[in-house]
Amino acid sequence: MLIVLEGIDGSGKTTAVNGTAQRLARSGYNVLTAASGPPAGDDLVDEYLQRLSPVDSPRKDGEPPTALVVDRLHWGEAVYGPKYRPDDDVEGYGCFGKAGFRYLELFIASRGGVTAYIDTKPDVARARINARDEGEDFIDLADLESLHARYDEVYRESNTGIRIFGNYDPATIVDAVVSNALARNEASDHLSQWPSYIGTIRPSVLVAMPADRKQRLSLISKLTDIEWPHVGIVNSAMPSEHLVELADALGNPSIRVLTSAAGGPAHEHATGAVVPIDRRTRFDSLDALLEGVRIALHAA
Image (tube, rainbow, N blue to C red; front, side, top):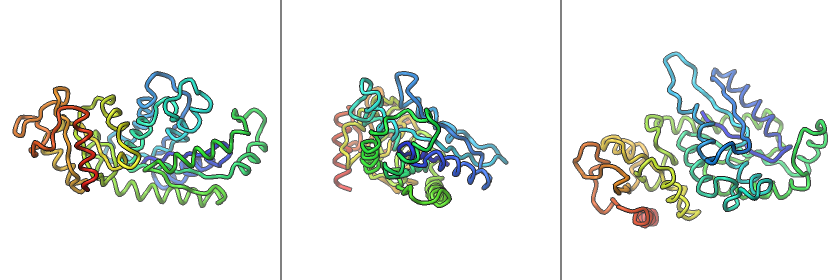
């Protein structure tokens, strides 16, 4: 189970993180927590994926299920990064840019994750911050309105987000977070056998392409705001029969395959072939693949 909690300073986010972790621990989960922070290297997408890696750890017989609860992640970077680290900002999404934001959204969706936005009015958050010990917060309180407005924008762009109003009592907020997380986790549990897949449980188009993240980010970045949430991506090196099984589990979306030299085998019946499909679904360049994905999306 994967839960990310987001919200401006003073929103009650950290209280919700602690309450959610305690609730899941009482329910028998092995609860792990993580928190975001300033980028430590050049690849923030990879850093964030590393923080989320416990959700992909195999579960041994007799072990309790794992629940990872994260205190702010990619939304926080898209909100706080441009304002407080403008020299590192890419396209208004912090260090990883719009494509990195979308990639993390697809990853979280494929793991049945939920991003819970604790939406608290700036004046309420300001009062809470002022009541804390001096020096506990490091933002300019005059920025709360603009930070809150940016969170609203990011929420509307997300495909993993739920909005929970911060005026509810903490127990009600935790109830909403946990119930949504349980439902999404159950709905996506069957996808755990395909760890290279990222995307929703019912994409319109399934793209098989190399594991090269730069290529994937390039594809995602060129899709429109309406298109990208409906695309799932999987490693093109997977055996043909596994791709067929995954497509069936996803509701049989249209399949598009990148068959360039970097993409691995592509012949219908070769060992390790991607899938025995019509040649019209295979493309030998990223630009051609993009066009093929768009045609499939608009035909769906």
